[in-house]
Length: 118
Image (cartoon, rainbow, N blue to C red; front, side, top):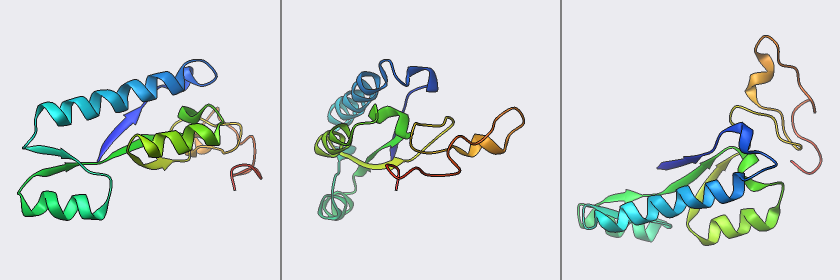
C-alpha cells in the first residue's frame, strides 16, 4: 500500500486537493515503473499482478481530514482507486478524535466518533 497523507494544517483549507495530487502522483509513478509496479484496485488485480510477478500498488489515505467532511469526496476517492481510509491520523476531525488525545496537551473533542463519524 501507498499512503497518501497531508498534514493536519491542510484541514479546512486544501486537504482534498493535496490528497488528490498525491493519489495522482502515486498512479503516475506506478504507470512509469510498469511492468515492475501495477495499479491494483481489486483482488482480481492483485491475483493477476502476482501471477506476473508484479508488485501491486494499492492506495490508502491517512486521515479523514483529507475528506473535507464530504462523503462525496470519499466516494470520488474510491473511484480514483483509493481502497482504505484511516478515520484519523494525527489530528481530530469534526467527526472523530485521533489517538493524539492521549498525549499531554491534547484532549478529546467528541469522546470518539460523532453520529456523522459512525
